[in-house]
Structures are given as C-alpha cells and as structure tokens.
Image (spheres, helix red, strand yellow):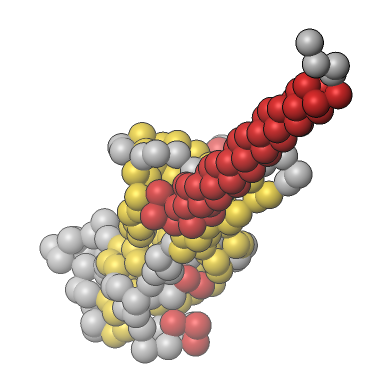
Length: 271
C-alpha cells in the first residue's frame, strides 16, 4: 500500500477517534446542594466493569482532583483545594463533603475503559438564606402623608426577593449572578390585606408573613384618626364661639333698639 494512502487512513482513524470522544460526552448534568452538605457525583461505572483508571477533574482548566486505580484500589487526591473533603468509592463515583460555595463549577470524569465515557456535572452550592426583614417607612409632603412597607435582605446571591399576596407574586426582583453579593429591597404601599415576603433560590426559601396594617397603623390610620378627632374638636370650638358671638350680637342689637325706643318716647311731646 502506498505510504500516502496509509497516512490518509491513519489520519482518518484519528479523526474518528477524536469525534467519538466529542460526541461521547454526556449531557451536562446540573446538581444543586446547600452549603455544608455532601454530594455524590456518579462516575457511570459499575463494580463489574473493567476500567483500570478513573479520573476526576474540576473547573474550566480541567484540574485533576481525584483518581482511582481499580487494579490495586489506590486513590489519589492531588488538589489541595479539596483537602480531606473528597471520597472515591469502588465504582469511581466522587463524593464532596462539607461543600462550600467555592466548590461550584464543572466536574468531569474520564475512564480508560472507553474513550467515549465522559460524564460532566455542573455543581452549584448555595449558601443558607437569611430571613428577610420587613419595616415601615412614612412618606410626607405638603398635601398628604402615606406609609409603605419595605422588605429587604442583605449579602445574598443568585436569589429572588418577592412580595406575595396569597399564593400570587405581587412584585419581585432577582440577583442572577452567583458570584455577586447584593442588598435587595422591595417597597409595598399600605393596603388592607395580608402579604408575605419571600427570598428564595432553586432549592430553598425563607418566608416572613405579615398583616401590613400592623406596621402601617402608626403612620397612617392612627394619624388619620388622631388628626380627625383634633380637627373635629377645633371645628366644634369654633362653631361654639361663632354661636356665642352671634347670640351676643343679637342681644346687643335688641338692647340697643330697646334703649333707642325708650329715648324716643321720653323726648316726644305729650298729647
């Protein structure tokens, strides 16, 4: 066989091998866990399969973090990032213990059993959510006053903060970047109804229920009642003063007319 044809066949076989590795990649599996919990990523191997070496890598740079030689059951964990927090069972499945938010990322497993075996996991580790805080805020201007409720949560990432009216979302806002930390707050005008504030991520939530009239009463209803009573007293006093003044004027007018009448009678000539 001519050398040129032989080289072409070798090149074609290498291309096929490369493509088999690419198309053999499993779909990326999404895995979520709360910080501090353990999570196990399946290698795809079984105890009866004959893979000699199974290797796990982490991150975009595919840094080697764990490997097991199944012939001698030797395990190695070369990456200090996961010191004493990685375990491998006989199938080569990887367990990450005491997870941290910094453990979020891509985990890939390869095996010498088959060039097409390659599982990839996208692990997301979520920090515990804080309980939201609800407070009232009084707003005043020259013509009127109002009160609003403020729901806030601090130092959060990859969460949604929402006001719920019953089971329906009334308003919401989100921080979608897992790497960012933000302080979120939502305003709600005082209404005669019950609401709840919820902060959540894909695997957990914190909810604070509230009857908003409890917080808004000091700056809305109570003020209205107080001001209405005071205004009523003032109006009543003014009405009384006006009434007294009116009566005084009438009495004065009657007395003046009576005195004038007597003077006319005294000065007129007797018949």
